[in-house]
Amino acid sequence: MLEAEVNNDRTILDYLNEDCWRAVLQYVPAQDLIRTERASRAWQCMVLTYLQGVRIIIEREDKDKILQNYNTCSLKPSRYKSFINWTNKLGPSVVATYCHNLRNLEIINEKCPNLESLQLSRIKIEAGQLQHNLNDNFKVLREVSFQGCFIQDIAVTEFIADRALEKLEIRNCTNGLNKLNGPFFDSLNLSNLKSLILECNCESFEDDKLPFTIDQRSYGDGELKSVLSKMPKLEWLELHGGYMHDEYVSEHLSRLPRLRHLSVTYQLEHRHVEVITRSCPELRSLELLDCRCE
Image 1: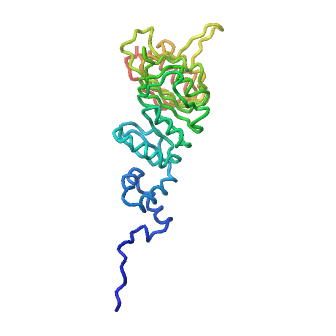
Image 2 (image 1 turned 45 degrees about the horizontal axis):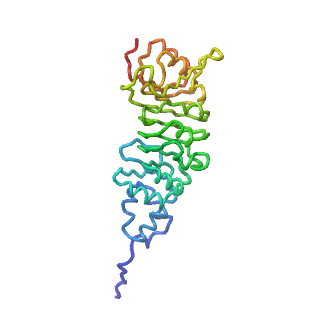
């Protein structure tokens, strides 16, 4: 009886058709696949082919997910070179990412045409430095986050242009001499904004010089006006550190009928809390982080 010839050069990839290995790989997290990408040329080809059909997020491992419910590739800051390599390889599949400098922003713009969410982290951006804006680039981008950036108000305006974002997040940014002040709100298209998160450390500021004061008042027509009145679709709002004079908080927030989540750092009176909860029927979660209500 003749023994069957054995070919030791064949691997499991030679026995499975594309439908089979796609069915298997859908249960493997994207970051695990990436770690095995260099095992062999055949395996690399298969992994890259499969990941072309996966929506990928590249995020810092110490941060919350930028977008939810997607296969996620988490990279530590120390492995940022890997981020650049994978952006080059799989840019069209990347729907959310972060960057640390303007050069990487250029790479993202060139390689990630389907980007939906972008986080700019600790980047120095002065007026006129940005070569990209949301009118001419990042055609489907709908979420922008500035984290600890050195950025001027006019640079924010230049970058966002008139794109109607769904989410805007600004945390602990500075314009060089002071914290970012917030005049850019006057020029932004806020009509489609659903989530606004503003945070800064105001311990070093006087009460009348707090940054990001968004209750800009106009007495020309005898009415109090707020930037918040330009956000009719706002559902998620976080204000931490000097963004609104306390006496006007409830009045502004009562004009947000779609608000579902509110987190603020203020000493509110009970009557102000009552006004907010009564005027926002969709409110489902309320965080008063300075709960010394008067």
